[in-house]
Image (cartoon, rainbow, N blue to C red; front, side, top):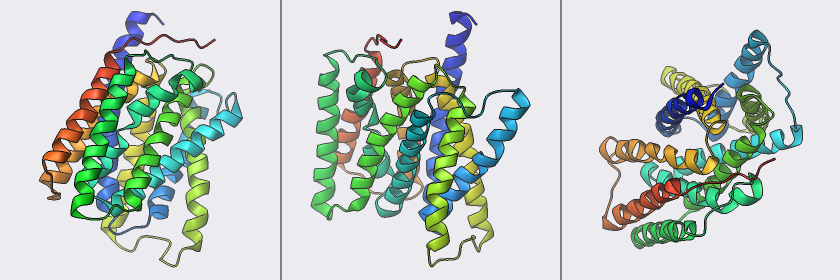
Length: 292
């Protein structure tokens, strides 16, 4: 396939990914008020675990892939990032959790040379510092109105793990198809969610129709989002894809502020603009791959 055909298709996938992820985050936030993290995780990963092998068999592709240890590490990082972010949604405002989570372009730039072999230009440090100032301002303003809690920490750790996940997808995409990458994500995620779900005191299955609809929405949007971003990562460097994903920020934050009535102040706005602007700056930097 020629580069001329790859680039437009990559742009389509990269454009769809933030929309699906925004729908996933909003669904998880709304459904999380009635369900545990483990119920949402099992629903999300379980559906993918059932669907992906069927798709792979129909397409005649390899399911188990190459570099299986790294595939499991990628699945573990992606699973932990999702579960921690869902927990953060339940503890702090949706808009705040999303802004903290979207520090991951900066973490992607920091980790890219070691994980994906894509060096980060020195000027990237300027934008990384901008993101650091932005998040410091947001957390300082938020701490003035109430104590920080585990939700802030969970969103931050999820951001780091998301950066690792993106870089591993970029690295593993040379030898594996997108369905294999997602299969390991679902396999690890189902195992990690199912065991705590069976041990929790709450009912295992949702008791309301709205809860079932929410779980289904999370699962479907998850499949669409993961396949979209994996397709994009096979065609663009992880640093660029991660910043193109910033389109999710105004979508989710706008929903939190306008629909959920979450408060905003000047510190939040200035900090969010610093993070968003720094992410765009990182996207504009040239990337050179040193992968074999």
